[in-house]
Amino acid sequence: MKSRVSAKKTAEKQKRFIESYHKYSSIVMKVAFDKTSDFNISEEICQNVFLSYFVNMDKILPRCDKAWLILTTKNLTIDYLKKASTKYEALHKNPLQEKYSVKDGYDTVKEMMKEKVEKELSGEILRDLKRRNRSWYRIMYGVYIEGRSAEDVARSLGISTSKLYSKIYRAKNYIKDRYGEQYMEYFKYFYMP
Image 1 (cartoon, rainbow, N blue to C red):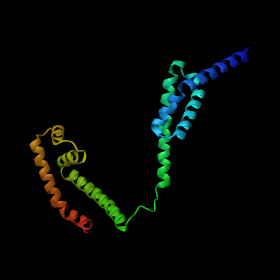
Image 2: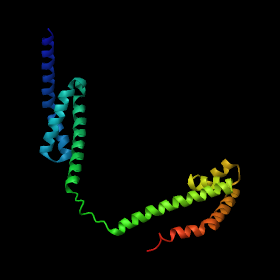
Image 3: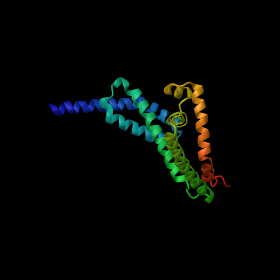
Image 4: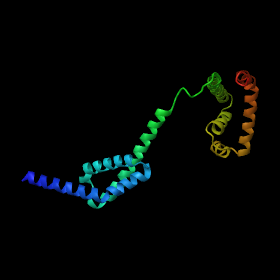
């Protein structure tokens, strides 16, 4: 009894597959060919689509066959084109063609060193501001490190915007007086031609 039911189910599945293949194979080929412009690739994609259809047929409603086949064709075609372009790039890219100069390496190292020095100096300045005047520290940190607007920082500190700008001016003058020479000493090496 069980084998008859299984045989009947298999026969129905084969019949549905054959009908769908005859009905939709030309549409699947057209969708694949429209994207690839290559008949052989379109045939390969069509075979893979119908193989996938046969495997997943039990999960697909018969009224959704056409939509499922077209969507799967589009997806497999896109996958194929992505893989093909990746293979092409890998085969045609010659790393020896890229030209690097000693100057490029020097500039990169120079930039990295400059960033490191800037971070160290800005950290030192912020620590000094925090010890010297907490208000200046909070203002400079809020405006220049966090990137908040002057109005927002003034509101959070409970002061007017004009008072905030006055404190920024004083803090900048302090920084320039205290660290201007050190800044120039650090960075004179980075601006030489």
